[in-house]
Amino acid sequence: MRLRTARGKQWLVVILAMAGLSAQAQPSCSGELYRQAESALPAASISWPALHRHWHQYAACDDGALAEGYSEAVVQLLLDRPQWPALNRITTQDARFRRWLLGHVDESASTADLQQLQAQTATCSSALCHAVQQALARSATP
Image (cartoon, rainbow, N blue to C red):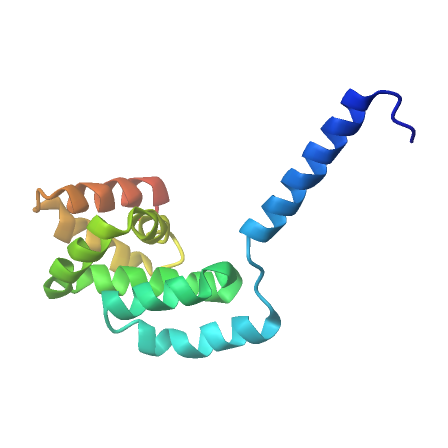
């Protein structure tokens, strides 16, 4: 392909530069990193701070069985109401994590757990409870 104008060449340079930036902005998850993320998830599932650290370290690996494990961990931690103050602190400071965790309130978790979470959040009026209720409505499983 031959570019006939300087303007055409400029656009090609811009497109190639954007493609390079896009590739750099999205880290990849190697097989080894995925295995590390999977093996570290049970320990990270004990508290919001631990899950938050895990997410930062392995965010690129959020797929397949690991994504299902994240969904189970998120729902289990949401069911543990004494953990909510820590969650509020973290999500106030990290909106990306908040969006991520609400995205993991989904049908990958057990129906019974989702129904229990729905019942728990129905009686609470915080912004976080409303956000969880909306996530549950989107999952449409309970």
